[in-house]
Image (cartoon, rainbow, N blue to C red; front, side, top):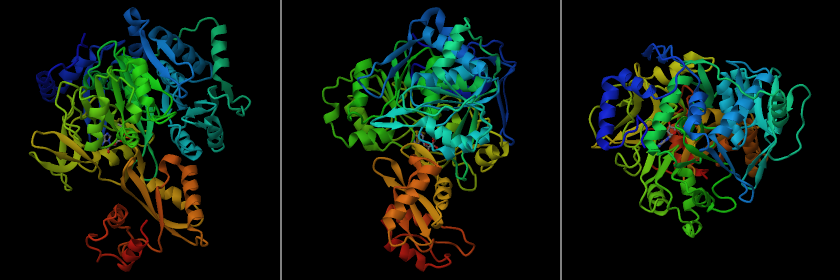
Length: 637
Ligand code: PRX
């Protein structure tokens, strides 16, 4: 059985795309009418990219949790909504039906209310990959609170920066999280973060690892105690708050080319429609399919394709707490066979790290339940694409290479599984509603095929970023000012002879390390916090597993003859300021950086040296001191 808006043939895809461009309002109005609205919208779209001001489904009222939960109860109450596979394969898994999830979300929504959370309040969620994480998101949405999930790998400092930016007075966390053979002390990290955030009123703590934690009187409460209180009160129901289509649903912080992460804001109506539409169409979801997205809910992929997209489509979504290589490198394949997974959506870095173990971990696995494979987060190299398709998909599953960004809410460019053709290392064609354009440095549109340029999008889609929290001007300058009248993605792109798009990577100072976005300025700021550091410059270099590695050129006052100790110390500093994901892979101590006479660091030269391309460094005559370059070349690691 297909969804009313499901595209089933290549011809239908072209029809849908043409219609979405000729008349976006009619197109999206029709898609949106398949959802449950308390009150229909008065007007589909109002927009300008100058401010920017984008509004979808104006005047429409809804609650996304009624779409993700209540509307499935009539016929799908006993369908599994979430299947949870724990980190430790010996621990009991969990299956939560739609009926149970509905109940648990209402219970926790009441817990939030009892603890003072109101519509519009910001709730920070810092948890491991347990079902309660999804429950916490949905409970916020149920009462109209704005969730802001922070990935469990971020440091106390990163958390407190984000808490302050969002002025989030409520936190939901766990005592700890299991990841492979590690235990991450989430609550202790929160406690450190809160030293600088006295405005936080409540911390709700879920017990997961049973690690001893300190609970602060009047501030910290246990998840289970609070649930018990709600149960004792006798009425666990929690009616959904009526939300405007344009009320914020969540904030998610992401890195840009400037130092401070930005709080990307998504709103209720447009985000719901686009995440669900793309989920159904890209993966060609059929009711009954088991969908396994391996991302963490701390990133946008988890928001859209573990929680909101699948649940709004009434799908069964599999949440995995662990990592692909523990207890061994066959763990993903164990999970696929155990639950007969039909759709596997993962990242190139995971594929490459598993490729490094050879084919042995795949042996003994059936994998024949798989119908669709997906990739996201960074460009997928052809070798990884073929390995995935051949050894996991047994040449029998379409691979969708899905390109999109935190700011987009959902997939913008991808083939549709089994419906439109794939091409290794190409995201291929835009989804209906998406009008990609390539522009040159001057902002002139590059017409025709077999061309490269900077990737922009011409017209809004329902889940485009609305603002950056607390600083609308930042949203304008980051995305809408570089090329007036267009949304600028920050990615470089090639269009082939058939109009297929191939994303070639960032064109700004943003790195993509294991599919995680990290700003070079952010890493530099962290390195510069070390008292022995005078200045630093960070660039990316090709890394076999991570896609990009982090290479830092650092000027120190004095390493006291022990470069390695200093390196470790600097890495520790980055760990503390941002988190382990931003730790440099290589640190080279230098006596000077290549600068122009006006003091600007020429990163192009550093990038080439980091990449090992020493001979063709381009014009270095504009440098204040060209000799610097030779010294840096000699010291390369
Ligand atoms: O450079 C692109 C890369 O990841 C960036 C977005 O990162 P983030 O907001 O963290 O979201 C990641 C998951 C949606 C993009 O600007 N990227 C993402 N998917 C692809 C990709 N690059 C190439 N191919 C992809 N499929």
